[in-house]
Length: 590
Ligand SMILES: Cc1cc2nc3c(=O)[nH]c(=O)nc-3n(C[C@H](O)[C@H](O)[C@H](O)COP(=O)(O)OP(=O)(O)OC[C@H]3O[C@@H](n4cnc5c(N)ncnc54)[C@H](O)[C@@H]3O)c2cc1C
Image 1 (cartoon, rainbow, N blue to C red):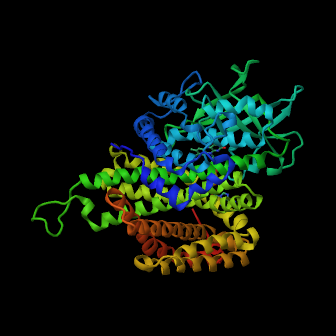
Image 2 (image 1 turned 45 degrees about the vertical axis):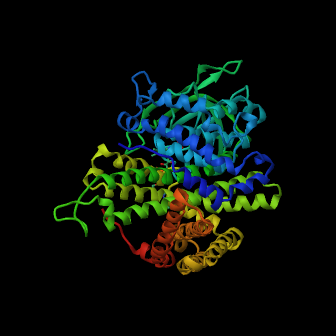
Image 3 (image 1 turned 90 degrees about the vertical axis):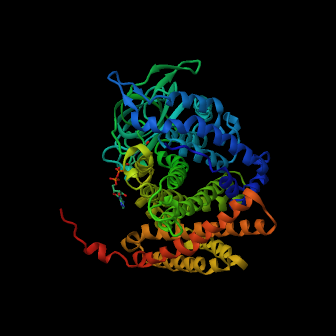
């Protein structure tokens, strides 16, 4: 059965050398963050998640969360206890604002810890993930009084948060939602409507649930413009701030799903429930975007985290399982399957993509830290722009890869991957949702070509490609062979970016998904090149022992990524630049 060991050495390497977390010390908010302490902190977190949370993964899947006849929801055995330990240990709070009881660490450090939480149990991780998104929204858009009332308990984890957007007729098109909000005499609102697919919509792990609900006030215009956002708690608060009377809302059912069984996915009915407006009426979509951006990176991280766990399982199996001969073995003797080149190809594909995803997601988070805390306005704007460009890449590329790599994890197991007892199948089932929720990956690709690529007429993406090219061209000596494939990738991105900027409408929409794939792979290739250069320099300086082995493996995976995975994506060019004619001429028939 699957154990989990946090890949602390690689996390630390990415933090120190690829995203240069030390630069954050220059920001007033992070003067206390000493990069030299990171490995110790990650070690401690890794022990917690592998010992306390990872063992709940299988039970969570097998038992699933259940709705009881009395309408309450019970989570699988061990989940409430693990959650309580998480709250006590405070790992969920490390990247929140100290003003509300958080640890004051950068988002990028919080993200590394979140990677471990998600690898340990993805279904469980969604509870703190949604709470985190809700805290970000409240911290940016709620009144001071609302912040003081709700945020500290959510930061500590004593109360959890949810995000209520989706309705049966309003999925990707959030603007189609019809939940109603009617103003009461006391300034609160009565919220009525049904929301579907609400993650951790009800449960038994915390004493209150703070639902953030999108609804329309009277006379609101149609579409996203008319949406407002409300705090709708499961339990209304007593005068002393403790949870009291139950609000008029209930979980009417839980979905039966392909994966993440631990996570209760609820149909929620609001029947005149008391809600408190956040900000002004009809500014709900703007507020929700704060939550969605943080949640989109977190969902992208799921692709990385679940692939990491699937990789660890596959490696372990490949040493245990013997099958088939190898040159040098006596007739009739079988080799561990890890010795077969085709199995090694699967494993290195997993490993190389995992390292590349880690670099991309952490860079995305570091850009968010710069956007919030850099000293001068220009640096904050640059961080914001980079985060905006990278977020659809992190979300869609990493969850697509999560699907592909967990599938490879099943493949490494052969038939034992298809049966449930090894755990490989659970990872494959769990991560499937990553490409769907938080804006489907198709919607991410549309966001990339529709909103992000046009920033400064393509210059934001262009500068990211300039940086990638600089990493490629800086490689020399033993790494010189990596320059050309990466520069070719950059050229392909430049050509397709220019094409998409001049061919708009359906022609561009038709090429959005392959473009996101190409751009993500090339940008991540640049980060792998940067890592290889650092590893090479440290080896040249005389690194020894475990460190030398780790560094030389960084060069192996970067070489595989740049020489074999990047060039394969250039085959996407015709898909990006062929326009919509063939798709329009296609007539699907049932
Ligand atoms: C397990 C789970 C948990 C969830 N958690 C939450 C939650 O906590 N809160 C919440 O509010 N929601 C939640 N959701 C809802 C989720 O965000 C939606 O399912 C998702 O946004 C897609 O909407 P939809 O299911 O209606 O699909 P649809 O919008 O019907 O999409 C169907 C297909 O059409 C494509 N498509 C749709 N519109 C376009 C377009 N304009 N251009 C191109 N392609 C398009 C999509 O990419 C997709 O492939 C959850 C869903 C699940 C399954």
